[in-house]
Amino acid sequence: MKKLNDQLKKTNSYLTKASAKLDELKNSPPPSQLADVIMANLHEFSSDKQEVELMDFYSGKMVKVRLKPQQKPQDYAAQLYRKNKNRKLEWQQIEKTIENKEAFKMELEEQLVKLEQIHEFKGLKTFKKNEVPEKSILKTTTSLPFKTFEVEGFPVWVGKSSKDNDEMLRGFVHKDDIWLHARLVPGSHVVVKMKGHPTIPSVVLERAAELAAFYSKHKNETLAPVIYTEAKFVRKVKGSPAGSVKVDREKVIMVSPKGPDNEISTP
Image (cartoon, rainbow, N blue to C red; front, side, top):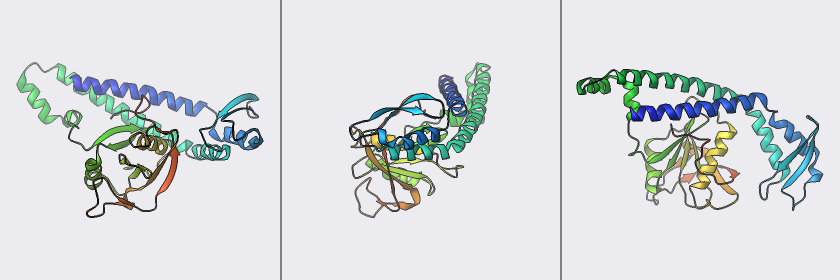
């Protein structure tokens, strides 16, 4: 019952945050508007300025634009345009995730009601044998070679060690999953599970990259490069050290290292 209640608490917390984010997406101005403002005021930026105040010609109000260290305003605007392009996809993904989480919440509540009606060991034994959802909920994850998180409904796995990185890649990853790793330094392999998702929203990719940078030697950098590609382009070379792989067709994304927080959850 404790494990079920813990799952219910996490699910309710996720639903609260996801609903708030969905409301924000529906009611906030599209990111392309801020990108337009930045591109129209490139002359306001200089090499020594990381924050400028600009007139938003859509709202008629002043807006502060803060750049990351060494980030160009054009690059930030391009990032906002990409985010705007993926906005509808992100919106739909959150709605789908909320729907799935609501169904999962109902399962948990049903399991708890059934458990409360059991008063003897025999009944508990039968319950554990027959209730498939309950068995999957109580399944231990301590033997898995990776930490598990969830970002906007996408499972994200982080290898626990060099040896575990190999095991995760060999036994748990699908060829269409997205694989990430901090560039040119030791670190954990990070995998975004893509089952049922044709594309990955930029917000999910960026958050996974932040985790990859955090769980690497880039952890204390202000800005770090992270490579990513589909898992089918990552392969282990026979005889190579643990955690070492050969990667083809990788792309690079620059992010600030960021560990787990309240914005992501463990499923």
